Length: 188
Image 1: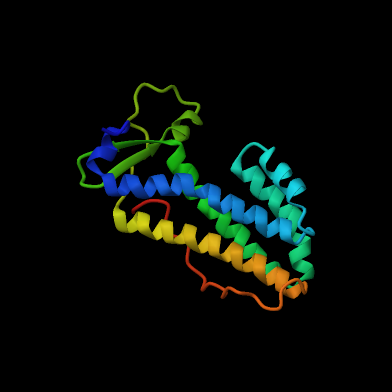
Image 2: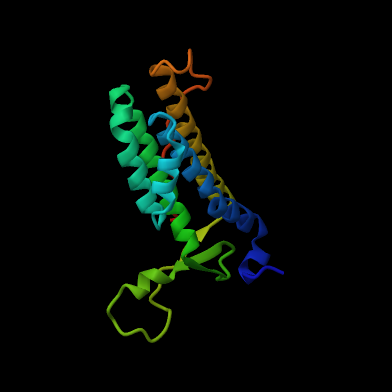
């Protein structure tokens, strides 16, 4: 039995959500490697600067600051910016799932609501009816997972392309991924 009862009713959705929640760490590690390779392989400094910082948003900002001018000098500013944007959007997807309440609202789709939304309001709270109810399903979550994969692959490509342009590698062993549109955060 799942700790979250709604996940027992929606196990396929729960499985993908679990991969998104846990998988964001892989994106952060890919970002860290992408930055440390253009800083003369200074893994120690980049890792410690990123992961001593609390919160994913702050880690993304640290990585951006550490890597941007190096990738700009290599003619990869646009691609690095695209990678940072993809990481930020992946983080938005992950964060909405990490800070929500999951339940079965009898619509046939897994429902969730963000408790932080109502906590930010100044109005006196009497019940949870004012929360925005959002839904997800397997095809929708699959699109979000594809975006996570695209984000990680884009970071890997930028990493190798930077090393190729700096002369460290003779050629990039990966192909530049085709742009992938950002999926919606929840079903309409």
